[in-house]
Image (tube, rainbow, N blue to C red; front, side, top):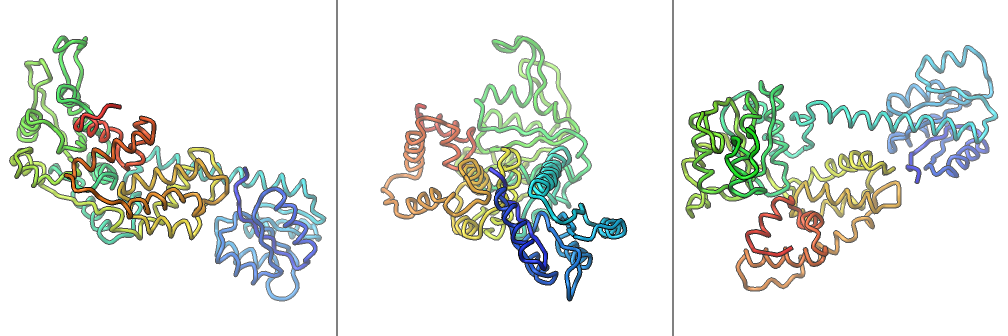
Length: 451
């Protein structure tokens, strides 16, 4: 399937413009035509054309060179191809000087046009992929790479800059999928520790024994299978930042161990007798209400106050709906490129549907939904039909007759229902629920659900 790249043909000869448009449409491209320069510019203000074919000689108003210069101002990324029946060295040099990418002579042959367009669009696709790869290789998590125009989120980004080079602990709280790790990375990569490691640990994904070893390392023979000395995440993060996700799920023993590390910057490996000293900044995150956990005796108050030196609350996506179109377009471009799918964008109707949805799984759920739509789409643009199942899910949620049972029982029933619907596939069930697989595994263990 070819990507529906928008192409503009500008020629005062209707036969010529319609013939070229017909050739290109046969190749699968979306093509508009304009009879003069002004009409072309009006179209370009509404559509980001990948390629513009412009006739050099057009009577009255702007000629081809003037149209091209104006077009480059309106759409600087468009590739301009000048077409003329008057092939002279001077006109070729002038066209190329003013920014034309190619110069072809009438009469144009369909095969020549097809090959030229294919070559230019392959280059554009490579350039787009390179931009994405460069962002991955570079510090992609700096504050200006977090996509938002929400005032509260912009305040958070400003705060990440202010605290970036401090050693103070940070506690980030927000619902699952809101981007807590992204904010943690923004803090790390914006400060003086940026060249040092950023180490992330999911505290809910491991048992107490495994998490203790994961955090602090272990000595040879300290437990069955410990064949050699292993450094823990705190040692690996020395000089940098350790991000403790889902901190509210750690056991009482690990809470005590973590408190000591925060107070003294020292710890023992599992089975070890020598203290290890580290210089590590701790950023923790949770989707739990820690003050409530402290009140109920499930979380140490002294550890909570140690962690909560700087507090950041990330609002859920339903409270910053203005970010949904920005995030959706970003995910379409990135995921389509990664999957090798020719998807150029998302329609207005589809965006409206996404904006109206409440996103219980927040940004992570939006990303998963976009990926599913891209995988199943057979068009060059994501349409509202690609998200019809999402509408059904929303309607189903709204019409659900909620039984009089504890909230934990509702959650247990929801997990069982989704697992049954997904034939026991934990990955797909987690995606449908809008949570991490590690979080789902934790809930399966908590509710003693077989899978």
